[in-house]
Amino acid sequence: MSVHHIHLTQEALIGSFTKEVPSLLTISSGDTIRFQTLDAGWGTGPRSIARDDA
View 1 (cartoon, rainbow, N blue to C red):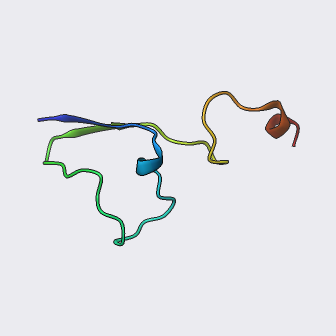
View 2: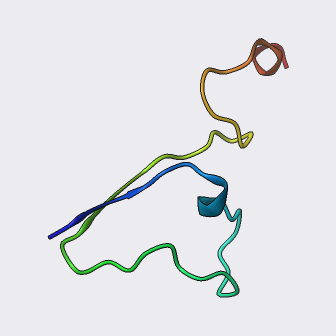
């Protein structure tokens, strides 16, 4: 069993499910995937004050 890491990079961001873009990885049964995600505004890191005031 393997542990796969998908880091938050431009190559890993698609924005939709599509068969037009090749897969990032292929996994086997029992493998683990660890990944980072964006917030609902497609941002990373601490929330900005501007978004908190909206």
